Image (cartoon, rainbow, N blue to C red; front, side, top):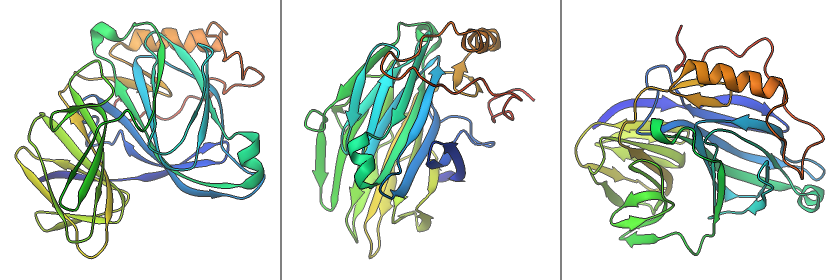
Length: 297
């Protein structure tokens, strides 16, 4: 029932944040509309340290931030200023263009913290790629939860088991699932593409062990997850395919010409910085970054 196992690859984003990058991957560019997935941490910040991801631009996607531990302080060019803590969701739709930053608040930086979470990018369907930018913060009490024997879950986005999380622009599901030791959970076959990312612990799929820091892309059919003597923290994700996407730096689009325009807009200063965080920004990479697996070679 496993089509492919994708290991997270370590990448330093700067500003004190190292991530495990899962998507995109050379042999698997997307899972449903999910085109990008980073595991942020787990990382321990000593007093005086914190996250400083400077303002940077996006087009053609929604970013979905979800934390297990710690906190992030979001600023964007719409004027949004929002703290996110564990169990909450920051859903930012870039559409035709948005600029944001992610920081640690000074009062938390003074104490130090541990941070652990996931940031995913959901590519927008072609008809929504140029939609107006938007931001939504969804509290933990609003997100629907479910419980079975040994399994508890939160539906972060889309529809799963008849429950609806944050709405997407195309059919998808995104779920945080915790499994107790010696538990089982069946992943329904409701979407064309599905994957399981192991954020903590280990899970068995048809007797095959998938360790923390790995994503199992699932083959069609009902798939049963099983734990042994230790619990597991999992992210279930997927949806219906939306077609190929190009990725260059922070830009996602079905059109290479649109990415070239976004590059020029950022380099020329035509994309506004967050009004509450405008003293610095990440410049356009020069030399350009190496191609991601979705780029033509």
